[in-house]
Amino acid sequence: MNLVTARDLKALQATMMDVGKFSATMHHTLSLFRSTWNWARKRQLISSDNPFLIMDRLKAEGKRERYFEPEELQLVLNWLKEKDASTFQLTLCAAHTGARLGEIAHLTWDRVDFRAQQINFVHTKSGKPRSVPMTKELIVMLKEIGKGLPSEPVFKQRTGTPWFTDRTGYRKTESPYFFRHAVEKLGLNEGHVRQTRLTFHCLRHTAATILLTSGVDPRTVQEIMGWSTLRMLERYVHVMSETKRQAVNALEGALSLAS
Image (cartoon, rainbow, N blue to C red):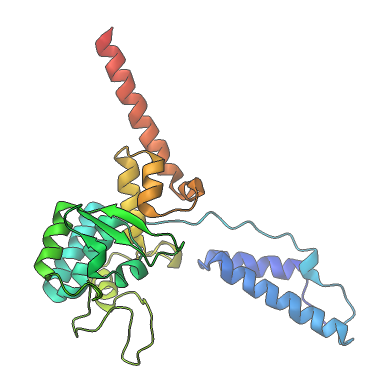
């Protein structure tokens, strides 16, 4: 009988990496194999050692974050503004605040402070409220929506129902259909594997990237994005490197003028 070997498991992992499977999926698959093998050996169905324990595991590459180029984002916004106003509003807010879909979907009018020109997100992933200043474009859009009751959701679907509730009443924050449709129709994901496809969450990466490339200090970006630690900056190493290069070029120019 031919049993699965450590080499077979390594080849399986390599295949999953090649087709763009997430590291969590690879880990779950291999863990399931390990548990199944241990179950069989405990019942004396096999006698060999578990090959999972001796396999040379491949190290998955760091998470590849794709973000919208300004031109791409504008194409999406223009398409949505014409096809579905509610998705346009949700998308513009995400792009201008860097907030997660769930945070925006649960936003109520009592958390929108026009006087201070900021949004106070309460339903955050970390559980810690945070405030994000509003851009002029975002303020104009929110005023056009028309302020509702304090506990009323700011953003609603075209049917008038909240974004975090479907027809069965089940709470969810699924990526909006019209957003996915816009990206597909505009061909922005053609030729990309799953890991580099543009999604609604990429709007968050877009905001962080623009802030960093604009020279905003990491601590401020951390507060705006709601990151618990600065380790989240590791996925923006290329952005940070470019920002440092721009800073040194500016320093060089200033020193050259002074001499």
